[in-house]
Image (cartoon, rainbow, N blue to C red; front, side, top):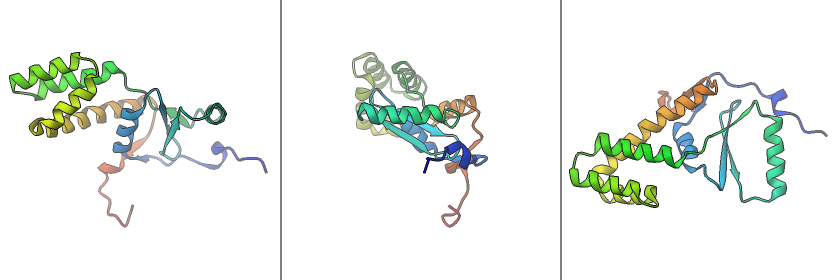
Length: 166
């Protein structure tokens, strides 16, 4: 029996109900060892482990190409984008001069993201502000990306649904 094409059997839900936090994780975790794709028909995220065998990756690549109108690659965040978000946070939300200077020094160093997060998590007054700032910035980034790729969507977190409906 020949496999059925995804395109023949499924019609996109309109609008797609997406989970913002899962998209945020995919944007943040996409790197040289992994790729993520958003399925525009069902709204789920496909994780690709680039450490898999050539055969498995070739098979998956073929499947994605055969359904290129269905799957959209989630972009990898560049070091520059991440650095700009960290700098924006420091300039907009950090008011203590010593903390601001320390964070700006960290951003200019090697392993800036890891050291920045370590410093933030050790300073609880800044941690909550950072988490809120990060979520706001990446929500905007994700919405822009979804609109750029013509997704008709709503975030599940924005819906006022009871557990029995979900």
